[in-house]
Image 1: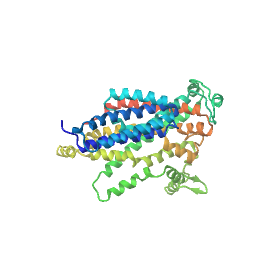
Image 2 (image 1 turned 30 degrees about the horizontal axis):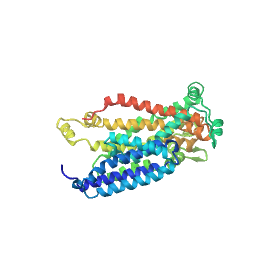
Image 3 (image 1 turned 135 degrees about the vertical axis):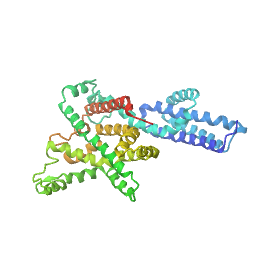
Length: 411
């Protein structure tokens, strides 16, 4: 077997440094996540032991010891010392349990060093996504109202286990929930129009013309603009007060419509106004960029063969472009529907432009959750609504992956 090279030694050193960084990040969150400390210690110790198993045998064999391995071993020893000091300060029992489990885990698995590279992202996912989702499901089973809790007595006073009571209330007694769910689904009508517009715009921006990059940048500007600024501008465009007519109604009056609609104060026009604004903001955004990348990835030989067969533009679009873009379309539809159900942009628009009105016509589930959690301090019920929203997104994703894949062509 050929002796390890300096590059391999560098990889070992990088792996150990990554493990050190991940372990230190874990310990930095000890005060925040004291309840899950044994799990975090287990992960850190497992990565440490696995990394040491990969570096130490090479370092002990003088004939196979490459330059830089000593640095990795020294780093591992220093890391052990730091972890011991910090762990002892946080408690010796979790240390012993985590270290024992880590040794068994590292001995039985040879792929743990690779986890050192995944640890920073995995740590962020666990702390800021997985654990909050679990906490949301736990709070949905209570009637917790936002209040300071300093001890077990306060916990008993403000948190009461109600089981599935919040979900039963949603299904049977809360008519506003179903109305706002309908608002959320109605506002998603703009999604297919937005996707079609993104595809059409990508076809236009895929031309080899001088200055085409400038147009691509201009169409992408709404995506990188502040959502608050976009909503304020569109509120002025839709403005319809007698003493100050907005830009849109001014254009309609110029075109011969003497009494244009009150866009943001009439329930019948508030939703279409939001749909128009959403389409404008999303047509030239990430969906257009994805379609543009997909178009540039289609082999030119397909179009050349179609030209030789006498295929016209519509035939090329139908039989070459659209099937080859099916993976991109699958991803775009999935992410667009998820974003539509969550409605983060529509939440900002409703919050700033209409306050959820008129008459609740623009209130979405996201704004409903905000009202219960922040305005009315009913975190238990708000968590139940959030769980329903999560289940809607999860259910759509499963169905889409199960049946949508049949329409995808990879060749």
